[in-house]
Structures are given as C-alpha cells and as structure tokens.
Length: 148
Length: 142
Image (tube, rainbow over all chains, first blue to last red; front, side):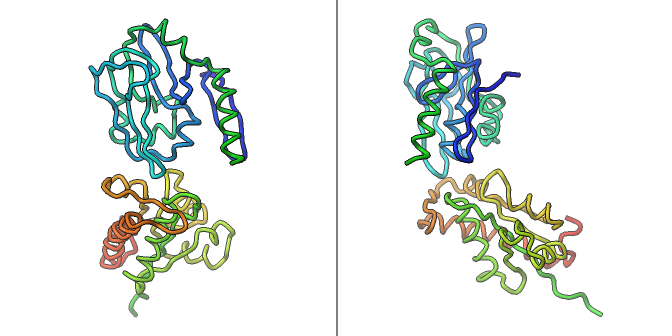
C-alpha cells in the first residue's frame, strides 16, 4: 500500500498517491506495462462534490492530450475531464455504471475511470507533474479556495 | 384494547452548504406537514446529535425513515447510534440519479428543479409511509 502525501486544510484532508503522475487539472495517471490507468485526484473529486453521473468515452476511442475522456455531473457542476495522455481507451471501469460514487470513496483505488493503451508516453509525461509537484500545486489551490 | 395509531419518525440530513441537504429537509417538510401529517413526525437530526432526550426516546420507540443528502448517510448513522430503528432510508443523491432531467440548484432556497426533486422524493416516502401504516407493524418485518 502506498504512503500517501497528505495535507489538511480546515476540516478537509486531501491525499496524493505518490505512484502517479498528474495533470494540472488533477487527473492522475498510473502507468504499467504500456498501459495507463486514469482517475480523479482526491482534491478534484472533493472539489467537484458527490458524483451522480459519469460518462466515459468507450473502449476503442482514440485520445489525444487535452481531449475529453470523460465528464462527471454533480449537483454542483458538470466537469469535463481532459485526457493527460494520448492513446486508445481499452477499458472503462465497470463499477462506474452502477456506483459512480466509488470515485468519491476511493479515488486512487476502485474509483479509477479507464485504462488507455499509451501511444506516446515519453512525450506525454513531460507535460505532467510528479506527485510532489502536484502535491504543492494542490495545497496552494486548496488554501486559496479556503481563503476565498 | 386496540394498538395506538402508528407514528413514523422522519429524520432528514442536517447538512448545509449543498443543495442535497436542503432537498432532504424540504422533502421532510412536504411529507410531515403537507402529505402525511397524521402519520409522521419530523425529528431534527441536530437534536439527536445533541442527545435531546425526547428526540432520542421517540426514535427509539417508533419506526424511523431517514433522508440522507449524500453518501455519508449522517441521518441514518446518527439514528442508529441513538438506538433508533431505521425501517427505510432514502438518499437525495439516488433520487437525483432517478431524475437526471432535473438540475437542482440553490442552498438557502431551491430552484424549481430542486423543488420538483423534493416533491418526487416525498412521493416515494409517502408510498413507504402508507405501506408501513397499512401493514400496521411499523416495518418490524421489513
């Protein structure tokens, strides 16, 4: 089990999985054997609120960086999720069909969104943040949001 | 000697800051004040959490329906921790999923879709209340 990076601001605790890369918007990427699993960071899911619906691009969809791979709907907002990588969607998390709230419950675990067969990871990862860099960015955003 | 009339406690979420909590309370008012005042009684969750003796007593002695705003299910958990018997719990988030066409907004005051969702959820709860009242056992065999 990973030792998460963690910060608490007011009554909210946010965790960051050190094994992932992150887009600046808070999409995590976990790469293994040429495949990437994508999901929402703890901060992004908490900021978005309880997820009522999620629509994910189906298997076979070809993604380029910054293209929509999924969208979520909460009572607060509709949020478009931009892919942090290029490749082809090979699997959508089947649990999301009946239990989209699993993203809120386990954002880095069972709440993953989809798997992508990577086509240009060496280039894509140069645009991503490592866990420590994302942790610092997230803390700053969370602090600013709390103060506003 | 006949049994006293069944009274069902309705305990909504006490959350503030999100429409879900507001919808749960508007729903509770709809059921207890407008739709089935003769069969139900509203119990504020805050009183249970504070340990108010009368509130703890009535949820312990009567069947209770909870209305949770979100997946944290504070209403259900607190009724159970108070020794109450939850015969059925409803979740605003689930109701929202059943009515995707509605886009509830508003915290202090709900928009029209929020009000519609509260009415729709109230109808589901009324059906449950009527079923419990008809069975007459307060959901003991639910």
